[in-house]
Image (cartoon, helix red, strand yellow):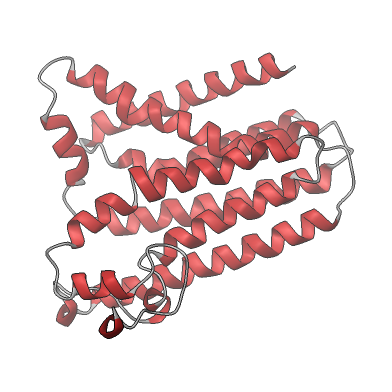
Length: 264
């Protein structure tokens, strides 16, 4: 059973991200992989929901987690699409590709596309597990998990909205967003995103051996906090007005009251 699921996951990821790679060749933009990232979660979640639809026990939980992923994935992909629309291709990818002297397309396919698929499967493992193994009715962990997910969704959505409004004002060019939710954490959107996956993990606790899938929030935390999220953003912020003071006063990820730097 487990081997069969793993094989299906690998096939879906290869097919999906191969298709996205071909689209990137046509469009001429590698950063299309970012826009398609959230959609990848939706494709796999819906596949396993339908695949197990006949196993009626636990169906409400399966539908709920799939809907949560659908909302999260659509919001994320739409947000990235609007952010990148009519702008040059993301320079992060340009810098990576510029370091390759040979087999560039093969490396792009493996390291920029298929690698995203591995991340999707690791993060989504809790949802796949629920859609396959859930056999009980809704319980306390489901409601706690949904509540946590909603808090994370609101945190991410509100902070992204605040940032869009800030950036749209030309008077803020070169400045750092320091108000609203951004007053309490330098990355409230990422905190919200991680919180949503904590919520889905809590839902997974309703299923036998669900605790194993703490891997979902851990992987997305590692990705955002150490690899593709915060480090790259803060590197770009380093030259902006007020960054050092903001950095010293404001928590990196967990929302906390600002520190009084005069007492440091």
